[in-house]
Image 1: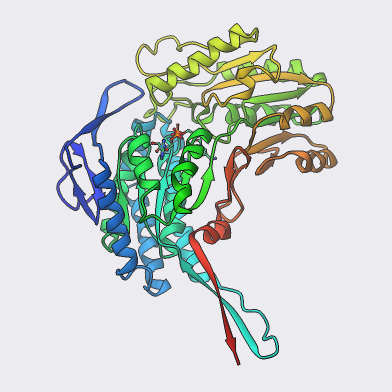
Image 2: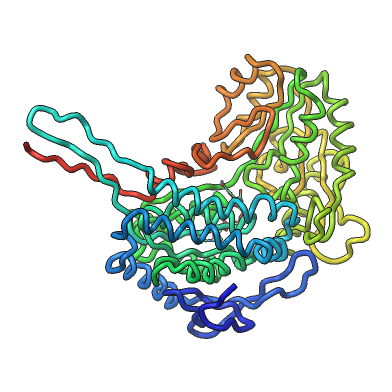
Length: 486
Ligand code: NAD
């Protein structure tokens, strides 16, 4: 990848298409979760740097060519970003897996290709979208325009750093906004790599800026900065609450994708092998570090034993190890502190009287890194902390249910409402249950199937607003009605 200026061992901030030191020169360590070794030193931004980045984005929005550029030109530049992600994919796949711990079979088939699609999809969207014009009413013509909103603060979590970052950057820039993105401190590398890609693609100065540092200081300074017009955040529900408080006084527009604790409903008519294979993914994919993961299993009583036997056998067979090995199915958790947090939940589950059926420990032979076996609890009830709070690790709770009504009641008995999965071959049941679940997405006989056009987001404590296709477009544009007397 062509660096704009030569890289030093310290990964710097990307502001105005340049790599710059953080004022004060402080750095923090970025650790490889598979080994515990330091992968890179990252510049720790100060509030002065946040201001510098926002002013660069502001200038690019107010004075630059970006927002006024013909749609086909802006589209071509964004498509080029997507193409360059694909050109540099091998490096990006390795980087994402080293930084996050996810197996390359996931970063190579999901994170990196989807990141390219996020740009290419919105590059195309931008050239196809049209606005409304109501029929002339007597002597007046009304038509709608869609202007970019301004400078966006984009704040992303560590579980899909590049995929979720580009899911915001793509529509944000396509609509003509400029942005400052702050990735999570434990996984900043692929977002920083986008700096080189954006510059190589030829985006104007200040359109895309990256700052790094703790959420409590850098994140807060960014979302409360008066030069920021809108905030798109993906992360924990409690962080979303803190951001509302910080961004609220400025009445900034917000879009939140927050936590989840999704139910997985398995009914007796389900194809058991499909349900087992799908549930393996929805519980343990990406080490269970997925907002959409479905760790709460409710299995109809008559198939409970058969399902559990097959599920446990499949979990035991998961290949855990080096994320860079293409055969690996599950890597390490993202950090020591997250590992400790997940282990504390496992201890709490035992203390509450749940039965630890398998897992709950480091896999044999993996002596370093933050590896954890897939973990299954039975003998649980919905009031236990392990059934209520988001653990965000490979920990599933499985309980039998007598009826469809009980399954629905338990599924909805949660503060979260991101998604749910139903396994059934009973057509009426699928629709009946889907209608009753209070969530943003229901998957029937599948999981994590994403189409970039459909609404994505959470009900209840899982979010505010939706992303995807026209939903992202709505968030990143300001509708204006023009009324002309004829
Ligand atoms: P987090 O909330 O701890 O951090 C997310 C980002 O917010 C990081 O960049 C962090 O530095 C920043 N941040 C922290 N405090 C801040 C503050 N006060 N002001 C501004 N920024 C701040 O989340 P995480 O641990 O990185 O990610 C895991 C969480 O993300 C889980 O809860 C998961 O469910 C959620 N998530 C949700 C979705 C979704 O689409 N709904 C997708 C992925 C992850």
